[in-house]
Length: 461
Image 1 (cartoon, rainbow, N blue to C red):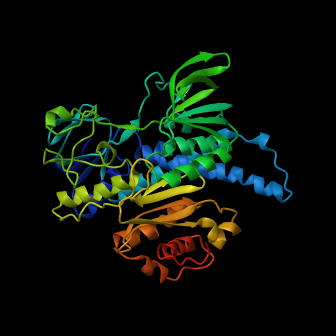
Image 2: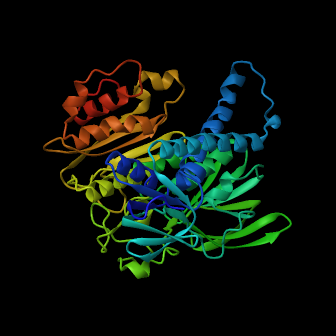
Image 3: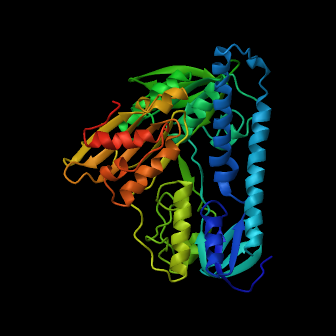
C-alpha cells in the first residue's frame, strides 16, 4: 500500500487542506502519503463548495429566462429536467477530482485509499495496513450536524449532501438553518420553482454577518420566493399523506408547516471521532475540535491539524492557508502571524462577502469606528447588467482611516472583496484606493466610491 518505510509527512484527508498540504510538502522536497477514504477534493469539491456553486449558476441561468421573456422569447418552463442539472454538477466534480489526481501523480504524492486511525504518534492504520510518518497532519474536515428529532435519512430529512444529490425537485421544502448553506440552498430551490420556507432560530438570517448584510439578504430571498421565519425553531415532525408536518415555535406559540422534504443546515461537526486520538495524547475539546497553535501543531509535537477539525472558521480557503503554514513549520520555515482578517463568501444572488469588523444589533461599534456605505446602484455597470441591488460598506478608524472591516452585498461581491481586503492587510488607506484608477464601467468602481464615502466625497451617492 505505501511506497516508503517512513514518510516525512502523512496527511489524513484530501480536501482543500489536505491536498494543498501534500503539494506544498512536495515543493519543499518532503516525501508524502495522502490518505483519503472517499474521493480526492473532500466535501468541498465533491459535495459542497463546487457542486453547490454549479447549482447556483444553473439557477441564475434559469432565472435569466425571465429577461428573455421580456424580449419576446417564449419559454416553456415545464420542460425543465432537474436530473440534468444534477448530472452536469457531477461532471464538473469529475473534471476537478481528475485534475487533483493528476496533480498528485505529477508531484509524486503517494495516494492511499482507505480509512485511517492512529496506532501511535508516527503510525496510522489504513484498512488494516500500517503507514508510518515522521509527522502526521489531520485534515479530515467536517460533516453536517444533525438536529435532534430531524436525523438524516437523505430521503425525507436531507443534509446539504442529500439536497445536492436530488435528481427530482420536491414540490415543497422546509429549510432549517439560516446560515450560509441554508440561505444558498433555499434560494436555489426557490428559483427552480420549489415552495421554500426557511426557518432560523436567531432573530435574523446570517446571524454572524454584518447586520446590514442580514437585512439585505432577507429581502432578496423573499423576492426570490422564499418564505423566511426568523426567531423560530422547528420542534418535531410527523409524516402524513400531505407530507412532513412540522411543529414550529415562534412568538411564544406554535404552528404547523407541511413540506415534501426537510433540509437541515444547522452547522457542521468535526470528523475526529473515528481517528483514535486518545492514543496520541492530543488535546481535544468536548465538541471534538483539535486544539492547535498558530501553525496547526497539537499538544503532541509530531501531530498537526488543519481546517475544519480545528476551531478556526470552517472555510476551504482557511484550510488551504493552514496547510501551507503547517508544512512550513514542519520544514523549519518561520511562519508569519496568523491573518486577523479572513474573507467570508456567500453565494446567494446578490452575493455576500466581507471581512473584519461587523456591525451588530447586540453590541455597539468601538468608539473610534466610523461607517460609510455606498449603494451598488451608484456604479453604472450595475444598472447596465440589471443587478443594482446591494452596497459596499466600509468600517474604518475615525482618526487614522485604517480599514477595520468591509462588507459587500451585490452581484460578483465575492470577486470584488479582495481589493478591499488587500487594502486592509497591506495597511493602505482609502486615499490609496481612490487614487488607483478603476476601469469604467465596472462594479469595482463601487469600491472606489465607497472609499470616497469614507472621506465624505463620493460622487454618485
